[in-house]
Length: 175
Image (cartoon, rainbow, N blue to C red; front, side, top):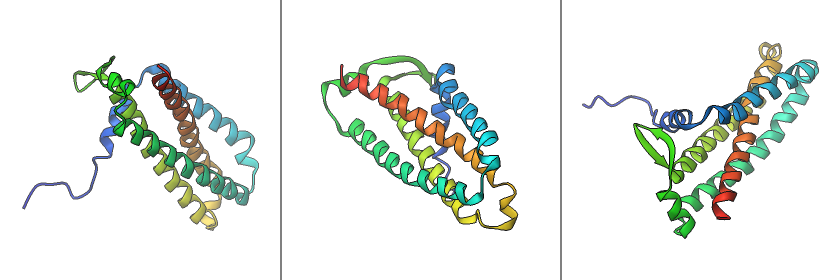
């Protein structure tokens, strides 16, 4: 019998890598702005809204996230399978960022960002599905706005990280 863990936890490594290599200004752009926007939405919209409207918003976000998941998978596929000169240059171009005491390439930086984004999109999809499913329970109604405010933080992070990834992707493909 092996001493293997009983649950799968390897998905944590890309999350750890993302937070290890992301610069402070990038974290502020993605997480700080997201928190700011979510707090504004919570106090001015969510706290005064019916739960059915929150449920409708969650349904719209699910559709949007499903499209973004497809986009992220497509970008990862392009990065993983392309053999263009630009992609090969990415693998050779080193960044000043360090992971596991080694400088990483621009290619690895992009892959980590897209994989983290994909994990976040899937977790946000799951949270929205759960919110839609249990939002009608009486015990849940009292905290629905607060819970959806927390989910909104992740939604904004996804949009802002997509902006950063798309911008990086643009600069790479237009080199």
